[in-house]
Image (cartoon, rainbow, N blue to C red; front, side, top):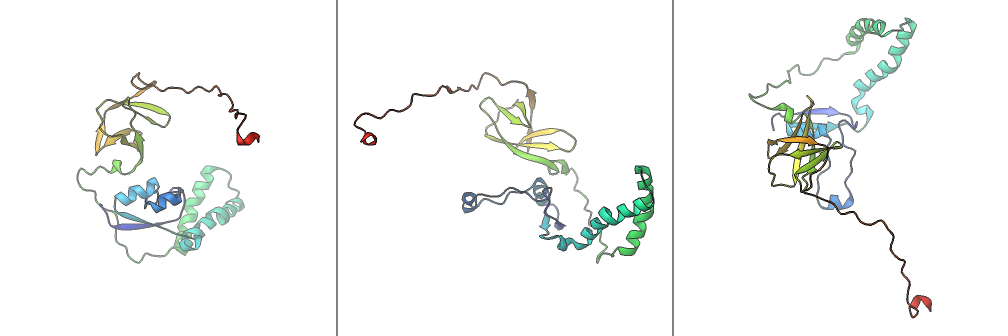
Length: 211
């Protein structure tokens, strides 16, 4: 863990995973699924605390109410009709709103943390998923097929989709070389089962069903 702090959020799907464990998984002691957001902050040592009701975040909810109701009416009274006019009005309105309703924090300590040298933040702030390596050393991801060009001794790899648009296939913190392909090699073939229906079962004459 890098940091020791916490963040207070609602239960929006961006922050809270909607996946639920089955009773069998709960009995097996499997941990509750995490969203990508929770996973990233957890690895960085930031605790995510979820509010269970809108009232728990009363101040920001009241602000949302103003922005979605009072602000619209204020703009209508001033006959604001364009985006440029709205932005100009906000430059006047928001400072006055903040001056009236803002509350100074208990502590003015700066919570920003300087990253250690050579710290790779991108490997945390990414979409991370697990993929299965097939017999022909390929994986599927987002509807595309990728050929891993290095020998892999594990059946599972981690795919990191980073903010700059790049994708990394990782095993034990090592990024593997790969290339996108349009079709699979002949190393792995699948046998298609016949879709022709079989003959219906006909019980013999002495079967109890006929008695």
